[in-house]
Length: 558
Image (cartoon, rainbow, N blue to C red; front, side, top):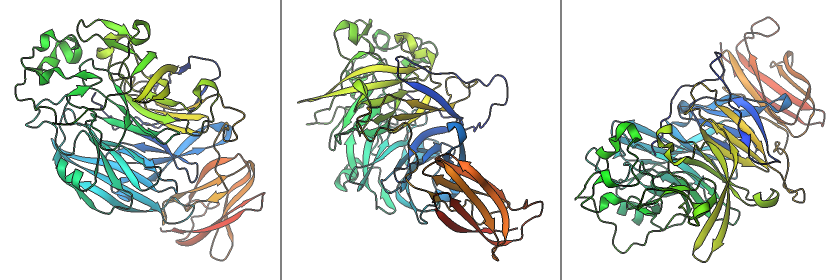
């Protein structure tokens, strides 16, 4: 399913037509809190495991840090821009255990484009300043104009040695489009060394394989990855415009997941000739405006055969009871897996699952313990003939068998406004909306508190910073203002003040009790007790009631 990102940034409700929809839990014990209004360009939320800080990635290239204030509400502050990291139109962000940040972005010129994977290493302890390098960049390759899925999902291996990067399909279902079908760099998952520098990725499948950069093949658009507690890697997969189920896959090296010959556990009919789409029971004649699907689904005698001597790896089957509606491939009848005694591979068609996390530390209570959590964005009412409106949070209970996994899928929360990002910290889920389906409703960052197992020491109602810290101001040098960020391990008295080179107090920015968490204040050099500060170096000093003291330098340039 094609995604469209609107690249406007909305930070506040500016009219009465801007509304906030309130998601609803489907069971007791789940609380939902709106933390902040976010922009329509927001695509990811990720947590730095070294600090506990949360970051929002926007498709316009900005990266924001979430700053928690009094009462648990949040604001955000821009910490990186494309001019800092060199990544345009980013769709993926990941962190290593030490806080190293990885980004994946795309540049497009018509039907050709390039993708870039960048690495940002924090070079000043406790600061937001990073040294950025390029891990890999592709040669220009045809990744489609209409079905331009590009490179998106990225994750760091548990060992910390490799990056796995999704490179989405250039087509809907392998059709000939703009003179191309799938090419070497599309519909695959890449394996890149975290310490790689300026690797040039060729648009050649065998070149990628022989150089160790090809992890797996046959994935249409694995928009997000997550590791379960046992170390197995899973990915959520968007299927085509036909009513083929969406997939959850156990991602393993060297596997081929079938695209474009197998989609959602079904054979792609266009590979067989003769093929008449008007008699295809899985084509919705109302999709894309009155049968326009018939222009891309057609008799195709030149459709390439599947690769020889390759066994396709099938999606994880689900028994429902939720997100399990499908069409019978012979009759077109809409069925529920849970009521018909059948299985679906894995979710209702066109839900567009786009985010997945796991309770890796098993801190949750009851049937949620150790489970997976998937958000789905949906992509238009035209595809809702199956009666599954998506825009929800699903719990995935996986059972491992000798042949793979099976899934039990239940809905925990309904009523999001096109959620596109998800992160987990203890028993807290953070869900980031993008507002694609309801543009007049203000997209939000939501905090979902799940029941925790009180016997598990790791379970906690929040995830405060692990220590007191004073960050390097940003930008630095600055004119006229700069942000100073700090984190507090516990609630208490804090004093943050600015001094000149002679040690004279210039401005007290904070003096009082602040809660545990991450905080941000701004100093405007033009307003120092009514007098403009002079150009030059200044010091800012943080002192807490627990005798933590930290001092950093900053430069004001007029």
